[in-house]
Amino acid sequence: MDPTVLQAGFDVLGDGRPETLWLGIGTLFMLIGTFYFIVKGWGVTDKEAREYYAITILVPGIASAAYLSMFFGIGLTEVEVAGEVLDIYYARYADWLFTTPLLLLDLALLAKVDRVSIGTLIGVDALMIVTGLIGALSHTPLARYSWWLFSTICMIVVLYFLATSLRSAAKERGPEVASTFNTLTALVLVLWTAYPILWIVGTEGAGVVGLGVETLLFMVLDVTAKVGFGFILLRSRAIIGDTEAPEPSAGEASAAD
Amino acid sequence: MSDESTETVAVLNTTSVVGIAVCFVLAVAALFALPTVQSRGVSFDTAFWIVSAVELVTALGIAYFVLNLHEERG
Image (tube, rainbow over all chains, first blue to last red; front, side):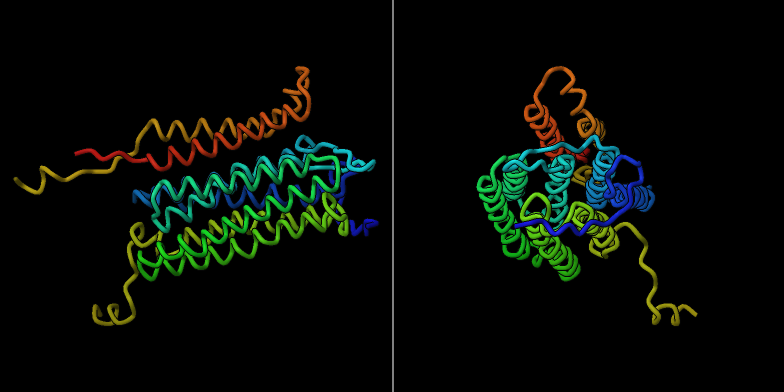
């Protein structure tokens, strides 16, 4: 298929890469998210809350470094596929290898599942990213699409595990945990499903959208899946219930008067 | 036996805190290390898999240290 070059962006560094605009914005959003979570978590003493904060701060933290490396062109390489040279932002995959296990760990801690379940979930997730990586570096379209399919199947297994086993475990922990877990799982289901779709229509797949649009959409997905996820998790009553003094209800306030 | 004698307190495990910090620094460094590794004569594919392995191992390290972030002290 001939690529429909839907380019977008602005060449910030003057090196012929219009997608640097989106990479720069991505770096900024990830940094803002990191510092927001640090400030919000400063002084938290609750044992469980500290674990969520540690994970949730590190996720956008490493993503901001990955975006910065792509912004400066360090996280970029070229791969020849069927006689055509593709620009591949490999730092994206390295970032996912680090961040997706930690996002799943957040959900596993919320559902309070055993360590074997956590290990299984993270193992399948790692397989998903590694097979995606192999696909990204493959030189023939058949190999690329085959690895993409393998990676997508692993993703479906992870999402199924989240929507069934972990969801049941979270439900047993009470309505607030179940509500937060369901919101986060819905977010993960929608966003993670969009990644393989974007890959297949993007420059690494069929080339229907250009690198500028692809980078913009990956940036939106990444920021929502990391900063948005953390924002919802750390604002939920399931997490802050033990860390902040509850505000009196209207009835209690009136009675005090 | 009084209740006080069996009461345990969860305190931060310093080793885990240091472990998380070290893993994070390694993961960030690895994201920028590929050109340096390649300049030592290593092929892109090999350098890339080294970087990827560091990312995955540091993520697993952080998962381990977070799960052991506190220790119970009586």
